[in-house]
Length: 487
Image (cartoon, rainbow, N blue to C red):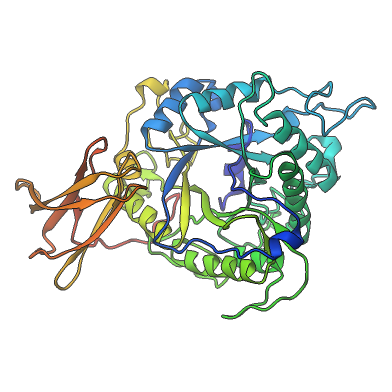
């Protein structure tokens, strides 16, 4: 997220991340043909970033996450909370059974997630003081020692290899959050981050070649350090080009020979001006710019600067829209719900196969983070759902063209179902069925409907197991320059 203080609030718990399969040596992988899935042909899985663990109300939080149609959950896990505060002579960092390691709290969270059918994304971050190569300074984070990070990656992957009593098998590991922001990694240097990613990849793939390593998770905006602002961030495309050793331009060429090993690339495309918004600066990446990031990722794969044992995936591991209420000057509830469905559609069109929502529930006021699927409540069991929840669970969009209405959606079960499309004229008429569309095995359905529709019409989708989507107006609203956290 562009405001690093926001991530610090999330990092109060444990962190994990989900990945794709990868393995083998760089030479073996280079001989394989790695093809990124074509945009528009992929599934759209969803996840929720869940800081509700501060309440220790795991069962309710995970049940609500699963009910929201999500199949993954991103779990922020602090390295320092698992490792001993001091590295003693008898501590073996790569051995999860070494005295000093404490896994009980994380095991409880992971087990609870699995019991609700959720795949945890284990997001590694926040090292213990002894694991820094460069210590933090002021508001800026330090740099972990890649060797120490690799040892911890071996330990966590081994602990969750499916053979440890009381610990379920886990296979997705994210390497850091927003490493292009100095409050998360300082210096925010792609060369430093490459060493970190490669250390984690080598470690977890040695434990199990099918483990998934997620890299990136970049903040969408670059910011320079100033006298008043002591932190900075590197623009995501600039960071990515340097990491992948690629030049600028429509046809990037190699600038160095330093491959990076990962299985999924992720981004945080917070956006101003609605789901079609473009960044104002050329190397920033908002929703409207995701295709440029996807193309750069493809270029890295094509020249074998990205090493993976299978097709590399493109993920979003954090995204959301604040709503009004409760936050003044944020998107009104109805507009935010429409934007949610449209954002999921735009990400899918750009090649994104997994989207993680921030948050399940609004933070308690006066926190600025009010992008939850639910309003904040004293108890999760009494939390009131926003319209955003329905749009996230059962996204549906419809766009009026000259002679057709183009529709797209994903049913809440992410399964093969027949979806009924209904139309209403105006805001008070009755609903009439106008089409039936078959969803594919991933629950994705789309069609060009030959309807004599007008901009005054509304469409919605109905499917077994999914219920009814939100009504979608064929009148395109004016998208004000509202940001993800309001104006």
